[in-house]
Figure (spheres, rainbow, N blue to C red):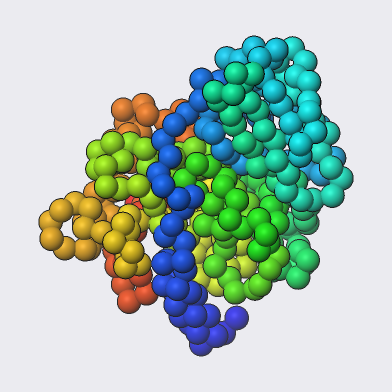
Length: 320
């Protein structure tokens, strides 16, 4: 790729950042804090939120373990078909075709319910440059960073369409907020780690306790395809490429940039640093499980965007 083409490409995507900032500032509506008295553990990750995303391969036997729940007191349906938890475990054979499904769990007395939006994903050869149903993804590195499992190339991708883009992947975040900013139309494809969503929800809840007026994050950049990540000049092992990172800022005024969150009368790098310090303090106080430990980055404003903070859940500490 020539230097002039790369610069033009970068400028185009920087403009896209500005356009998407306002579009993705709103999450799933009014801030939702509640958790449930029971949970469901899927692939080692326990969820107690009333709504959450689950990601599965075609034909996979998905195992969901009920936590703090009497199986006899739980009503379960998958796409409105009743299920029978056996020994506190739901075993669901996923459809052979990719698509979006709905798993609902309700207490027998109707006082608590959980909706799991189940995404049966598309398989794709991520070591090639072949597009997936016309969508450019690009090639992942064949060698994981330092041999770490969290940097193994993903083999499955969530399909995002106009019909499912507004689905909640957690109480305060929508699927469309994490889609890569490259310009292709629908369908789009995304990798999204549940650990990231849990961490963002925990940070937002703690921030709302500290500053009740803050009820949402703008996700400026979530998932990035390797092709897009390369085009904007980022390193190949950016955790955005693995669906575990988000660049966020607080924008309760709706003007498309970070609010004066540190209260010094200016909107600058100090606001991103304040948010970064807030997340760092949560981590140092043991607020996150080990798998949610991650990177925190501070970014100053420039001609293309305002200040923002990078948050990820890579499983080990990193700061910049």
